[in-house]
Length: 395
Image 1: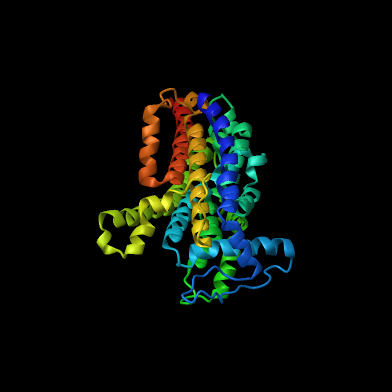
Image 2: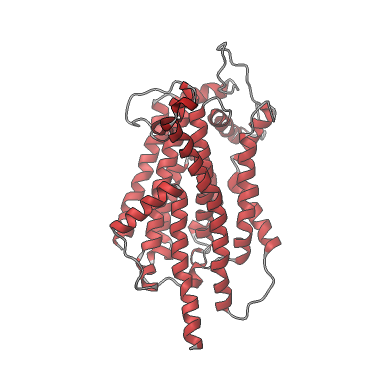
């Protein structure tokens, strides 16, 4: 319970930190005023050698003012992250996008657990839209704070049961499809170079469409659930629960197959500029340097963003760091909670060894992928009791 108490105290604090780092700092360093200026002129923040920007975007996307204002703001914000003009901003975007597959999987699976059914933490599409419009660095700690106080998967001191951890088998079968069509495909389309492969207007449209990936993912998962749901009856509830861990392993492996390579590729490229600087141009060495990729400036300082690209880069750095840290803390609570130890008495206690293990995983897998593996560990422990009970019955 000490770890849960710690998380309940520390994670809410990240809500305020997120507001400071994302919004107050974004306003103070000039990023948001620059974005508003470009938005009002309907111009894309594309750097030009002449200094005159002629890249514009449509006046309206939906025909309604409130959503169009927000969408226009988001188009200006995301444009320099995906247009290739700012390598450092594009690299952190690639890293975040890849690790987010593990994050989406963790959120979707936990929301779908039987123990969380119809609870406030199960309405992930709503939280996803808030992630997009306000920032994950603010909404992620808000969501996890609610989770830590309401979900029986962490609040209960009784041993976790396989039934509490179980998920509708149709959802498990459909989740990879939902993430692929609802998130990965829109992300790829948004990143395609313009005008070499797609037109500028098509790229702008792709950015707008991408903002709603939480909705597309939910719709595609629902459609996949209907299409992939098994009609094969199980002889008993134990048989159905025993099948769960096999399905979960598949979902976990597929998510990690995307998230981990993105992490490895990012840091391989970044550290190559330190180890083999001669392979890169001077400006690329600076842009891809490890400290420039991941370490943002002091959010309480007086530094100013020279461009929308630089300000968006800083915003995304804080978004990634805060989201990664709070999900790691939450995943450790889920993995090392008292209710997990009650399932198997020999389960390792949380301590220095656990911290070193999590740190090593973060280095190799990335923080969001590490959080997902901690949930996987918990599931392996929780569902192992199904086989134990079966053995006892046949003995």
